[in-house]
Length: 330
Length: 253
Image 1 (cartoon, each protein chain N blue to C red):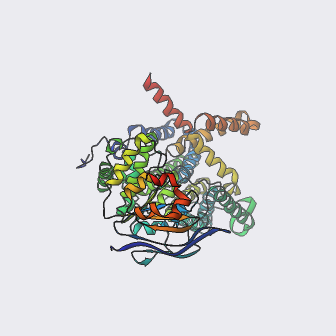
Image 2 (cartoon, each protein chain N blue to C red):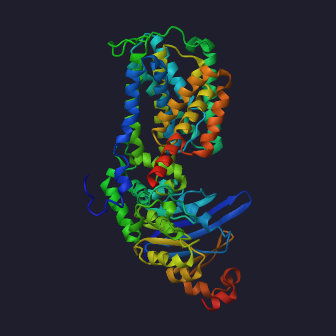
Image 3 (cartoon, helix red, strand yellow):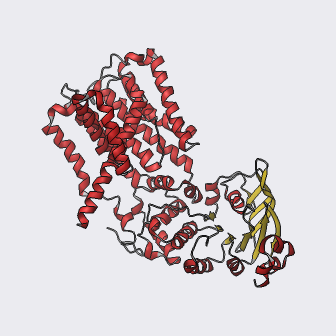
């Protein structure tokens, strides 16, 4: 570590240390790698989880760092999915090109819609995010010539990755592909949240008035965050379309928007890894409960959501923190 | 007389039928220690918000260093050298004291758009932030979360954030408000040590503090300037006595 000439290290300890890699951060990646080798039959579910981690991570950037609550984030996931899907129908089957296409498209949509709706805040903003999602959903439903309407997008032909690696039926390639994309996205987001820009986003969540009064152009900061988050959600949607070779209208729903927010709340908001824990927890619960007790899935989801929100504000990771602190005191 | 750094011309602001700033002509000069006083509801904080750009005026102009800045937004005025503190603490409660100031320094040094280098590796930002804490004598609290500090110390963090922007104009909105008597001394000594070249406008209810700090006073009543002058002139002004001080307080003030 480079010594600061005049600042005692203990005074700046948190600032100097926070961004450094901690050994515990390897854990989720080790688990993800182990699943590949130990649970080859669960790779389809595993791939879905990795995609939802990516989607939840994009929402964490908004909710956990910039303090923007959205009920319409599925509009970017859905647009990314349709964009990547439609591209394959028109002869561009290479998946990485599809990712790039969805990234640029959703990033641009995020910047554009963000520039309009981020003039508001609170309840008005929440309703605007929802309104944009509903418009997107209705467009996808009506524009059957483009999207297949209610039947979903038919005839996707996803080519091999870089012309070399074909997707297989056992989801092995899909899993590694989703993992690779997630890793890239995660590294970018992790850099971002500890950067001066990311800390200024957190500053806006803490006190937006003070941020303007120290000279921050708050709206353009938020619009950029919205654009980046939208681009990541779009990439998650694109991966989803490519590995399933299908896009249905369920990617553009309030249910998916609320679902990803629920995942984030389960895992822990504003912690990066909350997205991992929350998405895995939610998807595995869903998979399990939908099999043993399909009628009551929403009942159990509701009970769990109430329990987490009332008794552990930091979600599962917050609870883990508390247990560790309690263990350390004993 | 020294250079005018901040000026308003016929500044008006109304909320519906209620006129809260009424044709205010105000000048602040380089190095000034200017107090803005007036009874509750006189429109003092509204006036500060018009100066900073948090509120837009209904009519009239705000000039900074002779340039019309009426159309500029809050952050653009900050970039030109204006800083403020808030009547009620507006801090980043979950961050450390050092990071509260570091965020402001990062804006001032123009590094706040950087995306891929951690704030903790910005040596010049951290050093400037720490130096600011030392200047106010609160460096011992650098690593503490702001929400753990006493209210008086939080008021100092308010001032530290504003000063770290290296302002030429500083607007202090009741810097000692809510601070218990046991802690008000640290605020006063911090105010005494401010760079004499900074033009300061202070809103304050504590008359002892006003008369100790200010060399020029403007009195606002129902949005209008009703008196302006030296502390001596203001304390003997009949109108000010009747509306604001009450005879008894002036008699020993």
